[in-house]
Image (cartoon, rainbow, N blue to C red; front, side, top):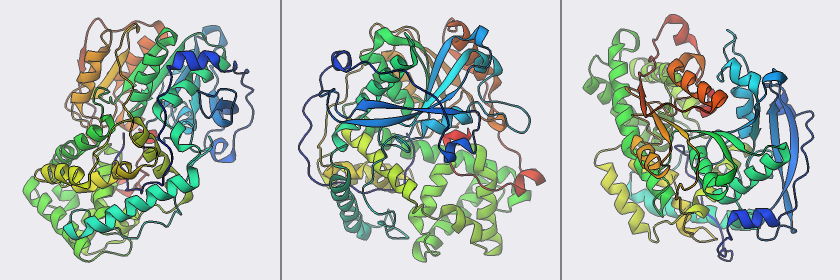
Length: 522
């Protein structure tokens, strides 16, 4: 799950009929042919030359396996030691809508020091397999509106006067999704992505699916386990979604507002510690006052395309990882201390690219298809008002995480019931202060997956634990995950490990540019 820029919702299609059990539909589908790996598209090959690529045709509708198909892009980083090869390891970065094709490269490419996010022993033993899920990236991407559809800046998310215009924007987006992508929208939910994963497994020639899923990828892995429990091999789920509510994605979105606020409060304490560097105040209250003044300035007098919504979205996204804390705080300091808004505006500028619009489209297509949503505007607004009493991110989160679903053309569905029956042991990771997938969700999933083991990173608020980049690595987490992937051996019981170190604003770190907020960067 991720903190999103608002998107807008779609037109009118027929309601989807209930989907038959996946095991039956998968058995009825033609057997997938073997994958033939070769050259990758340039946008993958350039940053990740060690990857090879293949395509796989899958049914658009698994109830009609002989009907229309769509194409999935698969990437592979081949096992480095064939004598030690254990099989394939499928990976998913979350989203919904993350480009899994790139994740296979990010997890396996050495950095300047030779460090790889997956340990060398894992790279020796597994073909690391990424894929763009249906509707994403190179796998028949969907679109809903023009990339410039949203006004810049967007209406202030907290202002009562903005609610009418924002509902209108979301409804227009819904109409656009139905018009531009109506043939695919009914078939983009998580259950169908899980069915695609099983066809990838079969095409790779593997009897079992070994899998590492982050964030939304934990829900995808959980759904796969429910549909194909006899095919589950070694599975790591990191940054976990509570799969139990019928309105699973609405509840996940609501949980982010207090989670991000708690993480932001912790961040303010970190800024205060380095007042000699950033000059934003030596106490949390002083730093908060400078932040609030900046937010008010941008709300009352937008700076180009950046207003209150854009600034809140930037701050919320930065809270998922400490990788951009220094650059973001440096930009905030430049504005507060020197009146220079250039970096802050550059970092917060809305994404008006084709890829950004497609990402927003698939995010909504998945969450709107997967579960129930409030039927009325009043329901959303009532919950936002309640959360806003303690979180600055409440109203922005309501618009970002599912307001399109009220008017979604296919209508709501009940999510797949997750029983957890018949599964092997699964390894779960979560930080205790994760703002995107709060710890309470990991505890719920752990309870459902009765044979699972939960590894908790204490004193940490980062989103996800396992296989981070070198600057944020938790070696204890990597050792536990690596042992499990290589041997299948889980810890004897739940484990708590120390948190990783927070960044230190050294002169070199202060010169580093701000990176795109992404789980791919760890």
